[in-house]
Length: 441
Image (cartoon, rainbow, N blue to C red; front, side, top):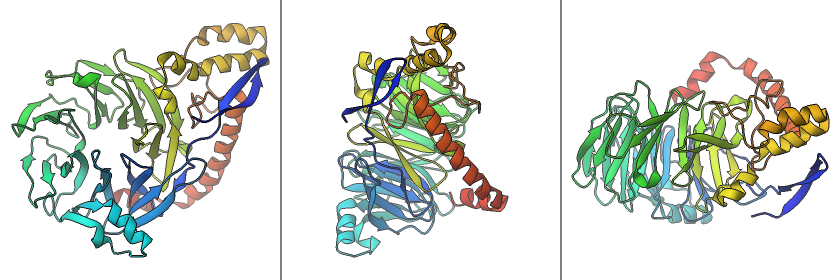
């Protein structure tokens, strides 16, 4: 944890903020489609729209450094996933319908020896893994040498890289596999489908255990919560659907707290998760009781959050959008005690002091009711704290620190400058260029 430094004085009280401990935003050589952290070291892999896979080493106070580049795919790299039980294997898949397993140590050594031959680091590869006409949409490492892949047509295959053919195949969903999760004891595989169903597979018996009714909304993301007792899925409509274990036919609860789709979910503990949404916000959500705790950060220019992932030490998350930049956010405060966490998230206390200084007694009385907690509406927006643009200020800066009025004004000025320059660029882009991006995915 970084040392505290005095940033400002608000309402006669000295407010302390932590120094910037996160890596700086880091651009890749092309638009980023997927990203994943190594489970044991400060390395992450990025899959790019041109098929390249880049490995970066990150540290505090600076941009991450590219340590090696692989070019074994001919079309966009859709997935990069480290095996959670091994730091040495990275699985990649592409629109070219190929799945590969990469020896990370070999890839790094080849780079140090100025050997750019990607084939040297490929320990397993399968062309047309799901057929000649179907691309893999998502992958999930299960245990060393074993992983699952789900495609655009709802099919799932389980692979062991010690053999060439899949161990087992499932085909029970009618649209793309949006995301997958596996139980802690590796006995059950959960699949969130674009057809609006949750499919649950018994891996020991190698068969479908249960499939839910259609939720009439695409399921995009999934996490297992409450020590396996609850399954949470994020939807295209922005609702979090909650299923009970062994009661998968229909949801037991729902949390309609996002104004747009929930693209990615990251579990923090058994009660808390982070969501990345198409509205550009990364939210902190408590499950049962369902409530919005706060907001980690926001992508500039209203770009959507396509994926978030957590570092091996649980202190950082990385997020990507429709550009070539990887953003980093400090979440170390989420590991603190509940009492300390409440203090760290007391944005409204800081806002109340700022209002009191500016408005006097009237500002003090109008904000007193909000000083006890974060008054958010269902979308994660505090209606009492709207800026003149109609957006609420972020609950925290990128380090998870409550932002004072001074911080907020500086942040808004920077965002306005960026938006003015980007608007000029956007006028030059036509619909055909925008379609090109999505046609490569």
